Image (cartoon, rainbow, N blue to C red):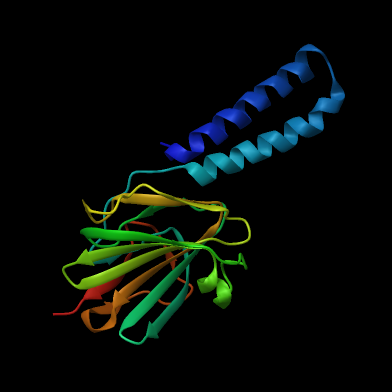
Length: 205
């Protein structure tokens, strides 16, 4: 299964690959070998990037993105858990806790590398959920390679934990911002996580 925004990309690269391969084999044009190799490599990379596997939803509060945890930080009344996605990670993002999507805010900004501490000021899309533990924000943050945040979710709708709410094109960071007094984080910086599956925080009584 592949993410819907990637199907045009995949079809375009596959069609180009087929044409180049036909020209190389049928017309015996050796100069087509280099572009054929390059396009084939990009097509394989896109297959990795846009894959969208089914997941068994994890316990408590789950990761919103695949990748490596790079930030676990208290910020006043909240705690931020940031996950960096490289270009080979699954980039479909998932809801960390069931709730009601209150609104989606879009902000323009610079595009410093997503793994940098300054990336919190980058162009981003913020999903604000009302949940049983209070407000939970999920923030898609662009990077040097990432150019666009795509929202599947619409404000005013209920969402179930593990549901697909968006994707970032290409390579980026996703932060989950939780009410600090209601949760206990269970992932360290450097941990590898899977969206919808890996538990990143447990609920406090």
